[in-house]
Image 1 (cartoon, rainbow, N blue to C red):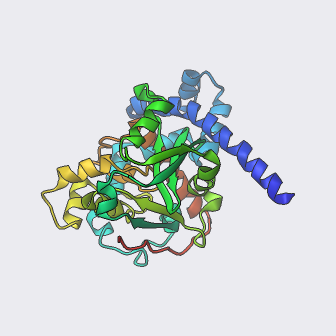
Image 2 (image 1 turned 60 degrees about the horizontal axis):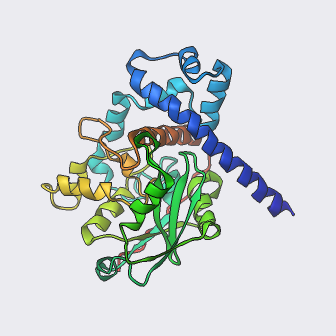
Length: 314
């Protein structure tokens, strides 16, 4: 009975998070356009058609930051701070200076790579279950095989995309695979990805990376970038031993099929600019701000866990 009540509470909480993001997305777009003017709470509330108190509570409930703190989190100075010593970040292991609260969700990710032959077959013989689920960043499309999560995507509302567009984008990546709509199968994965209460080392999020050898190496590198930090395309290229491959790295980052968990949102331009994002720049700003809020909460005493090592590619 207790488990049933807890499940019901979680089910009610997630749709609320998705509804929150619809309003928060409008707020982020506005703050992004006007951040240099440092808009105050009253001005933002008027733009949203909400009261100042409701606007403040909405933002706090969504990511743990006030609108003012969020503006600070998305300024160019903040981005430059995220990039500080970015090259050395990639030379560290989880156990050397990066196992504090800044890893949070990242600590609980385990992964493996499919063989190059699996990728060349474009998913032939592979069944992929999919389902749409509420998340802190709007509705998410999650794809999973029997071995773990193979895809996580969002609908770019700012570009006028729909659910169907998002699903078609993911199907094109593995056109020979068999896709089946099975939200009951993907829902547990969604909970473990988006609910911080589910971020536990004894139950790591299991990823299946399906791409070329180079793409998988780029995605594995992204998994080493801790929350609250960022790297540039050039940093990743140098880390992979090919400093002239920044453009190829950018293409691989853009083809990352597992958004948020494989944190391509933590790749910025060398000057601190946000660069691009396959699921929309508003969402990239949202994720960075949300993570800043999680870090702030961790600094106030959230529990810190130990890392789970990723599996080696086969």
